[in-house]
Length: 381
Image (cartoon, rainbow, N blue to C red; front, side, top):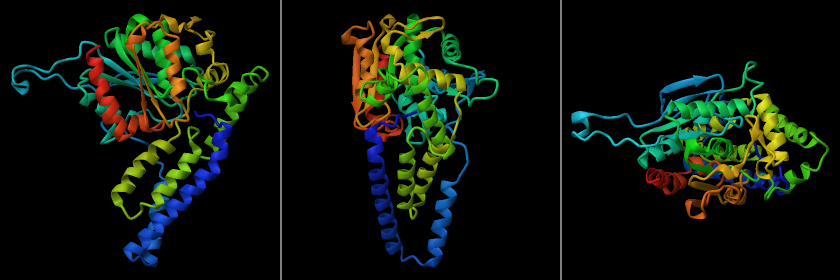
């Protein structure tokens, strides 16, 4: 869930107008190049409408096997199968000493963003870096039975997954999974060999004056205002993470209607961006009250599992990854974690990618230049 800052609101009309001009210009240029007639216009309109209105659910690029399941989600094994004997030329496959657990965001979209499509998969990038014992949580949509689940129940799933993997992991948290991983590491530091936080705000008020202002409103009013924003975006069928971005992407599709491969790629993206996966109500309310508005994690007021979350309990190596153009979690919001953990400065790395929020996890540059080398770094930890 992103925050509608004054700058974001002011830039929205410009972004939409720029995208519309670019999209229509590219489309008209394509029509001229194709020598298109009336039938082409009808075919393009049909294709454009079909893709935009598609309700097909997003899919994992690879159907990784499910090895454990809970009401709130399930654990997928994304590792490399062990090979024995002649198949491995007598040597077998080197198995990571410590498994890796990947926590995708649970913010109203599908967890398969980490395995979006061939060539744009964080899972595959980590495997390419040598991780053979890689697992990923897949968060389930909220149901009447799980709507009461808040932070403790989600932390319990993370804890159960780590126990299943042997009790200690390299923990990687993307976006919302990043602060969830940081909270778990603070409560159970002995279970985390290394902590990687990518595109996740830790200090929610840095670079977000509108959120800081909400904290000064009467109790509950700030969280209620954010809830109205979230509900309005969902009711309009726009992703609460970036509704203007959805309109920009539609204009991009318009400009590529004459390229079947580009349309297929866009459709895969659209499935993920437009998919609405509800978060448990209690969890959403907790996030808005205690993180977005209260900023309780860095203020030292956050309570989970019946005790205060003390980030200074984290002493393992910490890796911070942020997008330079990320409006959801700015580099300073991510890097704030370094000031609160007990990890020596020499064991904290900070990487800023020239990308936006989603680009951190599906951008070809980030996958090749950040995630595959990062996997090798974890193997050496």
